[in-house]
Image (cartoon, rainbow, N blue to C red; front, side, top):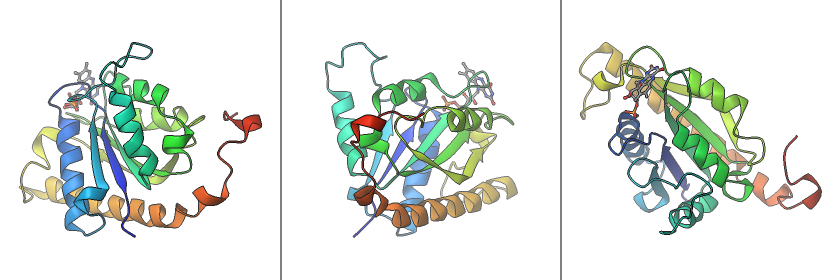
Length: 200
Ligand SMILES: Cc1cc2nc3c(=O)[nH]c(=O)nc-3n(C[C@H](O)[C@H](O)[C@H](O)COP(=O)(O)O)c2cc1C
């Protein structure tokens, strides 16, 4: 059975570098044969934003996203670094997303920076975000620095571009291995124990 993965581009800009990185990683997952196109979904929080919770979700955006996430075996979470923080759109996403969508699924974190940043959003998300939804962050992570200059065409233009492309392939391979290995967990761990519905 082919793996189902969801990529979440966390920038709230309608056309963002984070979405560019998400599209690149999606393409690599296809080219490396890890997923089929129908099993690979992209949530772009800039192009199709979630309302700031608890505003009314008249167009049913969350229902569409939740359906994709519930089917997923793993996720890729891409956050731009904004003022040294994870993106507000991604923090808002975690108000919506719970254990039914994300519980005991592996997640590859990807930080995006126009300069030399990109690590702060990843440590912020590792420190908070997973408590109630029980998302499992991989020990491997990806930081795309000088994002405007890399991952732009089919081929690397210089050594830093080649290096981040190789690193991205490695991180995706790790995600896929965890996604395969963790599949059985979700049939054995009790999800709906009312006593322990939230993490400590
Ligand atoms: C409000 C704002 C704050 C930003 N703060 C940082 C920052 O603290 N560190 C950093 O490396 N880049 C920062 N950037 C630049 C982003 O890294 C850059 O916009 C990059 O393209 C990722 O954002 P995007 O996915 O929305 O395009 C900031 C950008 C914006 C719009």
